[in-house]
Image (cartoon, rainbow, N blue to C red):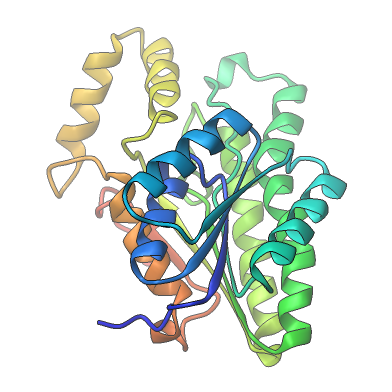
Length: 263
């Protein structure tokens, strides 16, 4: 299926590792031009080298702390100066630290909002306004099932995720008439470097080994395995494409039916 993404400028925050990097690879395979944004210049350099070694030349990197609104805006300006107006924005930057509920302090809730909610908002706010002025655009926020299903090791981060879901739905309704679609993908446990932190938090909470926690998590998966980044990337790329032209305001759960939900 031709997803009609050839030549489009896609900006991916958190694009140097994990799900963000997997998304970059899939967009490049579709012929898109990709800008990666990340905090670590070293991680960006490694990602760019890896993608270019695979034959993908239409990719650039921009280092920025997206927790800073001014830095996020400067990054967006630099990306558009390099490859033209951003037509697709994928937000994958930032993750709240997983903490067993007994270890939570008020600062942890503030940190979670800063790490996950505001890193998305600081890019999405200027980007969606520019898309609306141009009359077209698509945004996909990679959020997480923690905003739908409360977990005792992810309450602060889950609250930030839930706030992002509301922002996603509200912006989709507000900007639809201006030609902009906004959707969310909510992965559960996924085979990335961040998964280790979640396993460690669960292990502390239940006083078990991380290996035992992982085996139990895999056993609970109806599909018999934990998701990999490419699973998530495939959904993101489709939702970003004109083929998904009437999907907006959707919250796509991607936990392999581990938690059966109607909404």
